[in-house]
Length: 552
Image 1 (spheres, rainbow, N blue to C red):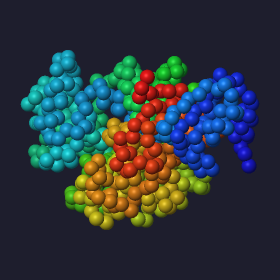
Image 2 (cartoon, helix red, strand yellow):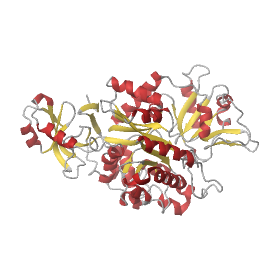
Image 3 (tube, helix red, strand yellow):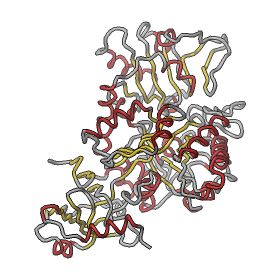
Image 4 (cartoon, rainbow, N blue to C red):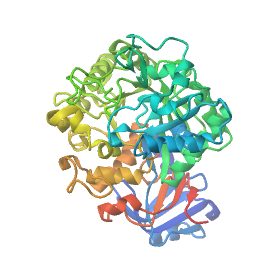
């Protein structure tokens, strides 16, 4: 039975339109992601970017004589890809602060910091992101002393690659308005200290707020500039939608100003930053959707635990490589329950960062209690990352209709050391895409940019191969968890749209939906696996208009 909305769309599609208002696109192949019509060679859409029909080129050109012709020749067209978990502001700031991704050692870090600091005014904070001690010859946390010799007076504050640890120099720690020495620890965080109780300069999870509170705040102009840069990065990489995980109300206001001016090149599915002003605003005003369709917020994002790389992910048993440590619950189970109950009461989706098996179990328990009899309804509550699941908990996601919002490149980045952290038994339930999908879980893929590259081609490759850029290990890391190319592309398109309640508008190319699509020089479902990383993106379209072209 057709829904009223679908009936209206079909009726509109049947009304003859002036030829000048219709574009007929033809290409070697169009992968529609529509199960009833998976491939086509042509697509017609109107001036508002609404798809009118998908099918054979000759038929559509005859149906719309005089329509504008967009002949893409041998190219392949796929639905616009959606990154279901990223951090847009932080991606943009990676262009405006020191980028430490790929640094090979502490000397490499210092070299980049010195180069960036040359253009900073005296006394300005030197900030950056992307260091990862797991990539260094000695996989130990650095210290303030490593920074102090080069920067004795300028405050330096550097976020680890996962965003769950920060590295400060002594000048930055002096700015904190309380004594950091001793044995006390903030709730949901940790200050690493030496034997004498003196802070080493490493702050984990909620302890990072001590430095964030004294770091100079961003103004709206810088925020807008960073958002613009990030959205340009997205369009250039074939992304037409971004799920922005955890933003304050002030940042939503900047997005709204951009949307009012028609300056959002991609679609933003924003998530409120926990139990704060943005969620209060949603509860008071209801789910938000901008008239342009380019911006919406109906979700609250909460962080349950830390990250595996910094040994902050909350585990049911000790870390295999750090006896006595079971990680951190950044948000207590009691506080998680408060947010979940509030989200359910307000009719909002909940998305919770959970990496360790203890955190994932806690989140599932909280969701079950909050949803109650509605657990079988269309709530679409999500677990972000769902990295390590115990065998007992893995089937619960499907039973509770919880979406697994996962990032394929996390597995290939973490595989050199992940088993060291959790041991050979727990690793079997880690990054378990195939197990989850085969139990019936909706699997939405993203990258967690800028922690990983926002380039979805790398995610497709990782999901299909579970190997690094050199194809190692041969056959893939725990290869039974690999997906097919179709499954991986679906997770970046239709499933990501589903995770954002947008599958009736986005995620596939079919009549009535939005004309969001990517033009590729190669066919991602036919090329050798290694070629997925370097697929050539010729253009990205949103609402039938190009937001990126490789050539003029």
